[in-house]
Image 1: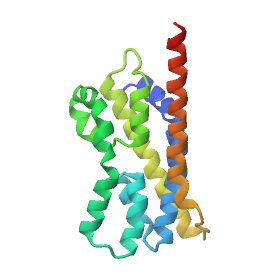
Image 2: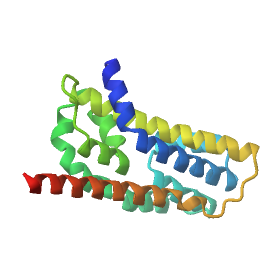
Image 3: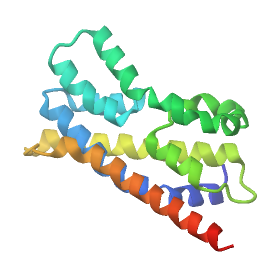
Image 4: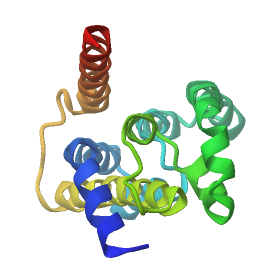
Length: 190
């Protein structure tokens, strides 16, 4: 990975950074507020890395839901990854050794970046995609850890915090519609 690749990917991921830090903090707070140790938020963010799934898992754990039911519920919630992963099959096949991680780390927001951000000239597709994916997961883990530690240290009123991920998704959706509409208008004028 080159320094230039990192700088460009860092700039491209700023919107995700802002969203993931705030939603990650919310997840960390929700986890600690449910009575779990702060480390669980970080571990789930590394191992599971599925924001909506993580938010859903906490109340399921707290209710004593059987593991099979939790796994089935999580699979149904995250099945959309298969659908929106399909447009990236050819690009991921070009990424050889990074392909397993790219598939694992494909979130709604990462998909959005990978499908709307052009790979800069002179930078390998594999390195660019890997850098974006790693940065996005880093932001989520960082936010979750900050929120969980803050939740242990400072008492919080959790009213409305669980809505944060939904709000992030809505904002990113609106941004994508704007880009799509803007690109359609530009092409229509040609």
